Each structure stands twice: as C-alpha cells, then as structure tokens.
Amino acid sequence: MDDLQLLTAIASQVTVVLENASLHAERMKEERLLRELALAREIQEGFLPDDLEGSGDESFDILGRVFPAQQVAGDFYDFFHTPDGRVGFAIGDVSGKGIPAALFMGSCRTLCRYLAQEGLPPGAVLAKLNAALAVDNAACMFVTLIHGVYSPATGAIVFSSAGHPPPLLRRAGGLVEELPAVGGRLLGYPGRNITFAEHRLTLEPGEAIVFFTDGLFEARASGDKTQCGDERVRHLVSSFKSDQSLADWAEEARDHVAKFLGGPNLSDDLTLLLLRRRR
Image (cartoon, rainbow, N blue to C red; front, side, top):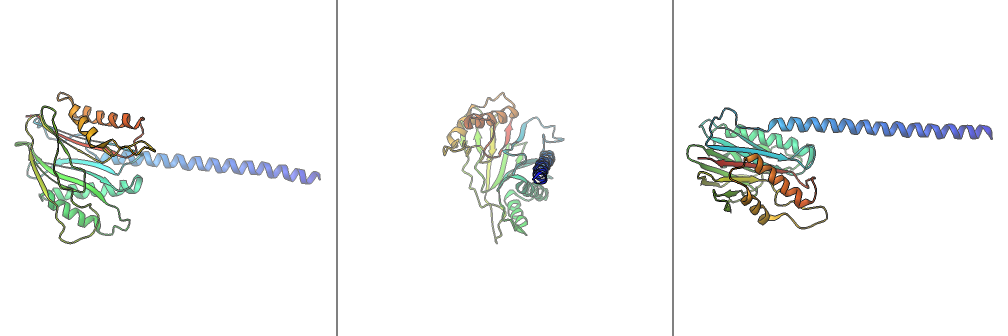
C-alpha cells in the first residue's frame, strides 16, 4: 500500500512537471511567433515609402498610411517617380489577412512598380499585373487595386481600377464628390484579352483625391451589422481642414473608424493614399 501511495505521489508530481513543461513550450512558441510577426511587420513597413524621395516639388503633397487590423496587413500603397517625370501611385487590398496576404501583397507592390517603370499606361499595367499574378496562383488569392500617374505640372491624373472602391475628390471648398470610376475585375485570375478602363481628371489648386481600402467604409463593430458607410466617409473627407497636413487627415480617418467601432482595434486593415495639389 505504501508503495502504491509513493507511486501515485510520484506520478502526480511528474504530471505537474510535464504540464509545466508543456505550458512553457507553448509560451516559448507563442513568444517566438510574436517576435517573427513583429519582424514581418517591420519588414513590410520598410517596403512602404514615407515620402517621395528626391522630389523637391512643393506644388503637391502625397502621403500613404496603413493601419493594420493584425500584426501584418494585406493592404498596401506605393508612390514613385516614373521615367517620364510624372508620379506613379498605387493602393491595393489583398484577400485574406495575416502572413499569406502580406506575402501576396509584396508581390503585387513589386510587380506594379516594375511594370509602371516601363512607361505603360495604367490600364496596360493592370492587365500585365493580372497576367503575372495569375501564374501559379494555387491559393486563388486576389487583390483589388488602383494604379495611376499624376503630372505635377498640370495636375492631370490618369488611373485605372481593378475592383477597388472608387476614390473621393475633395474640392478646395470642402465639397466631396465620388468619382464615377468603373471598378473593373479583380487581379489574380487568368483570362484572355482583359482590359481596364482609364479615368482622367485634373486637380485644381487646393483640391485633393482620397484613395482608400474597404476598411474605411465597411468598418463595423463585432456583432453589429451596421457599417460605417459611404455617407459617413464623405462627411469625414469634407470635414478635413485645408490647412492641415495629409498626415493629420490620415489620423483623423483612423480616429473616425475607431470612434465608430467603439475601440482602438480595427475590424479590417485600413489604408489611405492622399494626393493634394497645392498650386
């Protein structure tokens, strides 16, 4: 009987030791995963431009911001100089979340910039980008995307959309208009003779164009079917102050969504690309 009690006591202690070892291993695994996600986010943020390097042009402002719902985002933006002296830009939203979306996002951003440097018009860039993404897309991921070019000398913009939400045009006095941009098809699916419409407009001094992902107008709190909606977004853009920086506009948009959700945690990635003509 004494031997049985001793074995029971030893077995109980061994069980506790094994449980503690298992919990420790789980904590170590979780901490390692968090470190890897933090590094992935740092690398991802390093891909996104803070400003237009070497521009020196004070006739316009351009700014992008990604506010991720998780450690890494499937949303992205980009802007860069083109060979003909204009400014190329892009904003996209990859299906899904987390690491797979972030990896696909990196491919989209790199390919879009590379194709734009060939001097192709936006519609042709999207067509070629779709063909490239569709190759070996076993995971059947897709991306909505707007790519365009801006001419600082004239304020002219040409852009094409692949299933992306239409941007908003903010007039100098604060009036907001939704641009009648045809959405086009999503990128990442194979197909022949796919074309993307090109949209043209000219920004007048003081006007701005606001591009965004669906994390802005589709935001909704958990368990609530009410979305932030187009009307609230238009009111938000109209409320921006002309003398504010574009960084202030982006933060106001982030705060607007957080207030609507009732907390700081986003339900989806939120990305903005803002372009304003000064003179």
